[in-house]
Length: 132
Image (cartoon, rainbow, N blue to C red; front, side, top):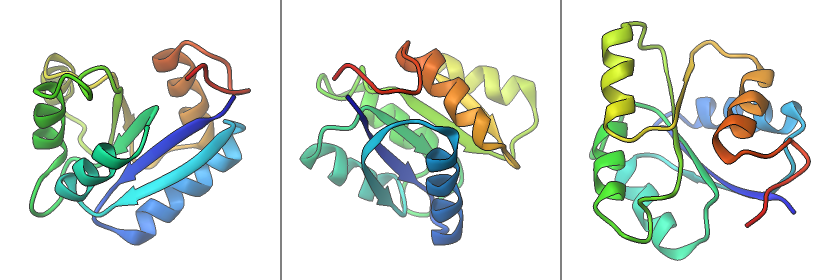
């Protein structure tokens, strides 16, 4: 099987780079959805089955932390893993994010292999596909 992925970032260029990196990583993807902020992401999450969310921290309207908080309050979304992709370098901030519910953190700039490693770690599967 393959994964449905949601990429959340206010930059369409970054979303394209993340999409390409996921494709290059060897992860088998069924559908890739995109959102420009957390609010748009919640709309996608409400309408589509998503296996994993890759989200930026700093976005207008609703940032990555607020998105994680909203998802944690929804019984249907609480188990959907969120991976933050950001240039944040402070370990204390990253640790705080993990306490708030993110499953993993990818630091910008990143390599495509980072996505394969994170998906394997977070979803517990190899890059050949998911189980949902």
